[in-house]
Length: 65
Image (cartoon, rainbow, N blue to C red; front, side, top):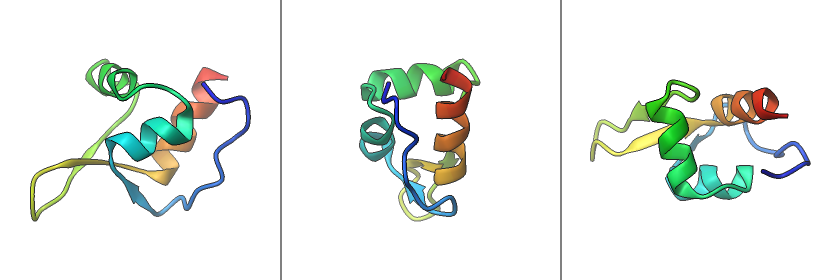
């Protein structure tokens, strides 16, 4: 986990690898946190892929620090 708060757009939508990179964790960790309810993911209408908002990424970062 990165020790510096990620500087991201709170309204932005980020994919799995982007969210993992911003937090300094592996994509598997993001998946575990989402499955455990520690993070909430949305679904894109076009392709059904999950995304995490910038505000959700910051919330997860703050809860882990």
